Image (tube, rainbow, N blue to C red; front, side, top):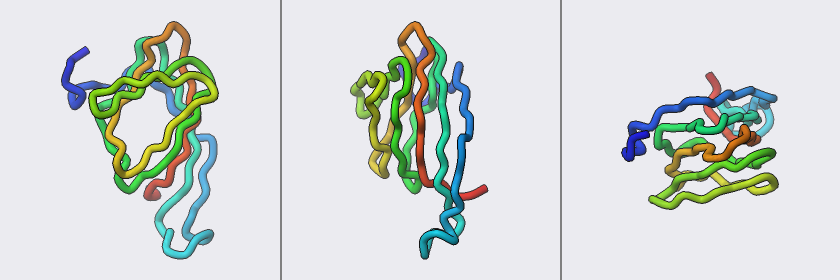
Length: 114
């Protein structure tokens, strides 16, 4: 794997959309946005990259199984089951599974539709 986080490519990742809600009819000013929930599985040795931000796409993550290493600002933090993190406009990161079992997270975020 390259040391350059911009060159890190996604591998060993499966993303399943669990549900979504069109926010336009729900909240004034949210036309064109949706709240979505996804299950993301990162296989051992898998990477969710490249380095990316969450500007205009805030969310939260909850770990169901395994351990996910979140790389931010040159710091690698491991999160295991029952833990999670916020992803706000200041988030710039990439993820990997350094463990021996698949890591499974639930990701909930607000995104532009389409």
